[in-house]
Image (cartoon, rainbow, N blue to C red; front, side, top):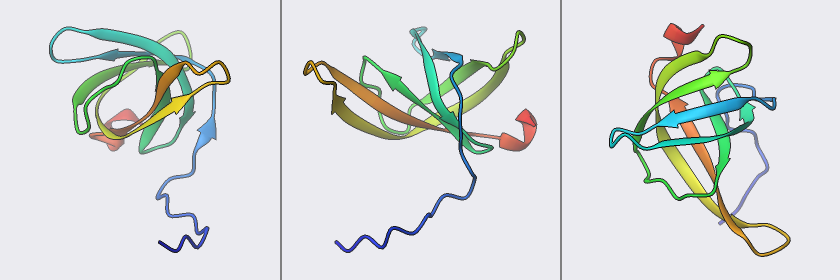
Length: 101
């Protein structure tokens, strides 16, 4: 596979550190911090693996009042930290980004 180092993202991403709550259909809730965010989605790190294409509701606390939206998992990357602890980088795509703005 030949990688040409060309940026293919549709939206520019901004690095922020803010709290996020992820609500799953089976009433499971995970919390984490946003790694980066764009008009189209958000990247977070989780200690638990989530399924590709899983639909969720997000509450993102950029300020006091959260941004609440529906999203779905578009990718999951398994990673390890310096102490060999397993975690997951997860990309969520907003289902209706025009409703958020």
